[in-house]
Length: 299
Figure 1 (spheres, rainbow, N blue to C red):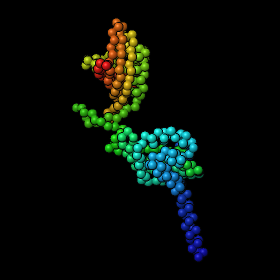
Figure 2: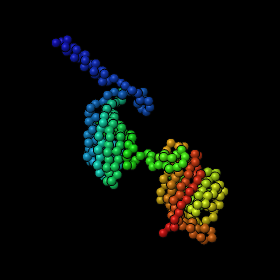
Figure 3: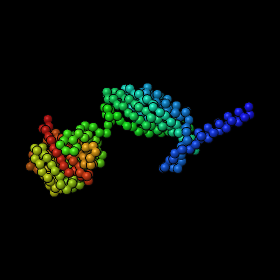
Figure 4: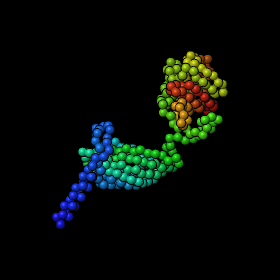
């Protein structure tokens, strides 16, 4: 009997030591150099219970699993999201509780697939990897989410559409561009309306190819731009939308779609007023290198 007790104790000791084994490594931040240990099933269950509340579309219930600080930080967004959602179904595929060696917090990694139906009729499917930090009171104190978007998704994709051309780009999709084009168009809008030619010129390349509203093709330089601005007594360019995009798997040259209305008053008193669609091309240096313009009479 004593031998059996000793063997059981030895096995328990081995499993206990194994459970506390440190694996992996953190490479930066306050826990730099530390590894991970297995966490508790309690932390996993907290995340699963919060997920259940999320799926019931009950903001108040979901927030009850969050720390006070987390509720203050994310409460407004959480309530707005649940009000926007019609149906939520986050299905866990795997879950793993961990902890940083020596920490009282635990970290829960969860992989899941979520289907969303929103009040405006939009539908979305997300493949998710989420990281939850659970404090010693058993509350979620931090949360990070990473996602991959299926090709069949209705919205949220990073690329889409198709370019039809006679070159190597034929059949390629478009994707959003983010090299400061929106800010550049906004700055151009401000400088143009203020008739600040110098500020406008700073945003353009040395040579700019323009196809105007009548189909005329010209190449102008910065002096031409200055003369154009100086030819008016007032300019009023009201932008409705800015859409920056590029062709997928190509260099960073981007095309920006701008919808707007504009009123120009020339020095001779002539008034020009139109609704506009314009395509701005930004070169590799982030400067405007081309403009294609389309207009219609403003009613």
